[in-house]
Image (cartoon, rainbow, N blue to C red; front, side, top):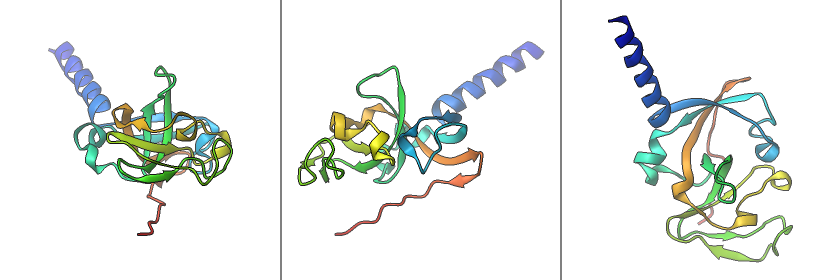
Amino acid sequence: MCGLHVVNIACAIHLCTEFVWRVSPMEGPSMIPTLGVSGEYVLENRFTPRFFPDRIKRGDLVVLKSPIMPERIVCKRILGLPGDIVCVDPTGEYAPSTEHVVVPRGHMWISGDNAPLSRDSRVYGPVSMSLIESKLLLRIYPNFTIFKNPLTYID
């Protein structure tokens, strides 16, 4: 009977981490100052993007499969949703800062918070929303932080 309990617990843990939430390490320079280069652990919401994708908003931090290397997972901030007009590259590094694009249906425009060290939509254009795996809720370690949406809007 004890073996069956272990199997049940293992199945419950798997279902929770696959479909509800999971704790993950984050590393890399593209999200500085929001996330550090290494040693940070975050809580990912895997439920909302999968079952309620309309609740994904501009400014949200998302974890997604890289559109150019699908075996890699990246973390970026959503700057544009379908129908939005976004500046291709506000930094002017990859395109003139006056160039704009309309984000197509089913896609988003993503960016790292540390533009000089981020490969994002400035490089590969609009990204399919189907690549989203999770939305970041909070940093657990080293300092507990709830991620708030920093974007403001001008209508």
